[in-house]
Image 1 (cartoon, rainbow, N blue to C red):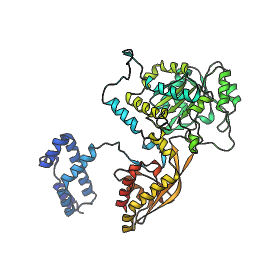
Image 2: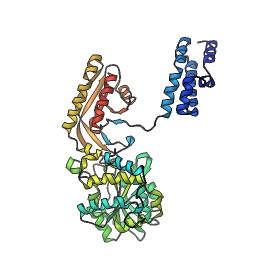
Image 3: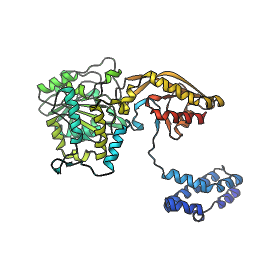
Image 4: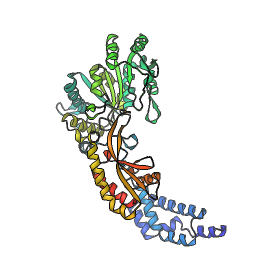
Length: 474
């Protein structure tokens, strides 16, 4: 394309002011506002300039583009004003997928949040006395009920902050500020987003005292490190990896006995704490109750992982230690809002009522391989006609494994059945992109040149959506 022709094409592009005079654009302004429409016009014109500069538009194709410029502005306007945070279909089989928002909330939790958000509430108001109350009593009563029922201990208290890193920070600062915290070298983990346990400990103004080696730490290592500055023994869950082979570490009961003998609190950063009986579904991962049974004084864990609730950092343990954290000024800086309390209260109530299937994470973990297989076969049958007509998309149901994810039980898997997809004209990666570009986006995984869909993490009402999307791709 000659420079002269390019110049002619550039000159044919309308100005922003010219477009703003069109009746259709005036209607957009009345509906969406002047600034948003101007921004969308500039994006569309800039895109056309780029196409001309790169010789992707000639005179005829520019005519077509200009004929549809109003529609292009409308599409751009819709994209710029839609929510960036969107629902997606998680077909990866990773139940607690951190990048996809971890635990979906129960319907009851959403309803309780709606009730609490759309009017005033007794968040910090005691209805019995008419005086100011405390916001954490709304969930602490339910935690106490669960712990008293399972442990026989009525002196366990719980407070809530905004995530588990905040919980660790608050606990260490409250108990060990200015002193030493003893922890095994094999537990100095890095969690998601490059957050490292030693860095969190440093911010708490406690001194890290490492003992043992990466693969083996003995009880004697802890005992020999105790001195007059020791304030806390800390056990950290290896949330996203496992050490195998020549390894060893003392049990929690041993550490608990040492802590009691030396009159030093024992804390466990459990990370993804569960209040559900995981061994009953074949997952051998210790939960919060196991830690408390073993003699741990303070346990910190997340609300939006195995618990199946909202993002939160939970600290459960000895009432005197929790009271110390509650009185720390950091607690106010790290506290959560009324919506988190509402969602957490509804989630905990499901545990108290033993209504586990209302919590999506628990329901997904409890799904059998046969139940998933039946759904997979039904979904394939819904897309088979379109696939048969095109001859492009091939699907079959194969054995596979689901993961807990979210730093929970890194070696644990659940048997499942997968929909394996191949496409005659698309590579597995390209097919995965097409699924991701759908509405709603479908997030899958690729293995051995096949796209795999695991319906364990797909809500049943989304099966038909996937079938429709596959039909269009076929």
